[in-house]
Length: 169
Image (cartoon, rainbow, N blue to C red; front, side, top):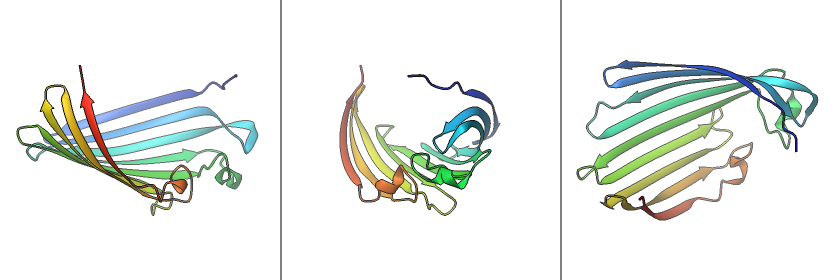
């Protein structure tokens, strides 16, 4: 199997302002090939802006916004197997808090795709408890909203409840 070579050039910047961290990233990717554009390679530009806040005791909050733009996009790229929009937007929000002297960890992560979440979303609420160093138990719930494009177009009716045990050595 032969794979095409991709070229990527990127940059990132972070600015700390007290309890705030402002983040930015940009990436240019060249050499992308799509099934519906068999005779040419395309480019994509990814831009991320994000902000983190850690000013509350034992709490971390993060918000990220990503836009991916495909150069030379054609409407046929919406079809299988490419499922690619000219501009795709992703939004992520995370809040995490520790309790009981950093032994109980609660985290909420929400990710959405598309300007109006038309490409789906996922929400994960999890709780972990450290029984001792290296051993924790936990569980949570994972909720999906189906979207217009894969992968979330097929996940809408696959919500999950999970339990886990983790041993780190």
